[in-house]
Length: 224
Image (cartoon, rainbow, N blue to C red; front, side, top):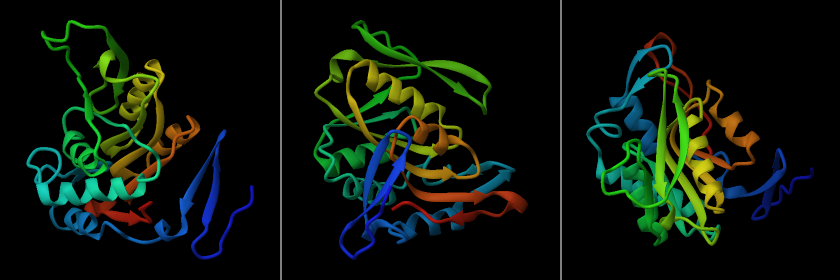
């Protein structure tokens, strides 16, 4: 597969059966230095493979940072014709909502527990948590997704890729197209990206961590 390296043209990459086009200007440039700096400042390494960001992402949420994150995802996927942004409760909701706002489309979040008011037909998928070592069922009402939709999936973390895989399965059950997956923080030393790319997905992570060893956060090159 050839690539085009002239300024202003597109780089061509092949992942599995699908070919993605990335603007050259998006490659190798840290557009989310605010996120990286915040992780360095407030993130806490609790052990090998465990990063705590509860002061600005997963418990207490920084709305200014989340809006910047959402706007960056909207810029990256601006030309994809996105009609819905899909995430999973709970920590994916904030960045997904701001991405949806910037794109001018609705945001849907998959529930981890069935609500008493969800009495309509549901799309369901199983998600295994390596952290909790349990399998849970996530669901979205079928009336909110259809084969007319072009979906952007957003999540706060990518590690083993099981949550995103479950969301892809929900979208495919509805016949919807998934144009990409936006990740706030990726643990690049785990195999989640490979799992998703093997499914034909374009994965864009705003912060990529190569190591959490010795209580230090080490970053690798981000996607956008």
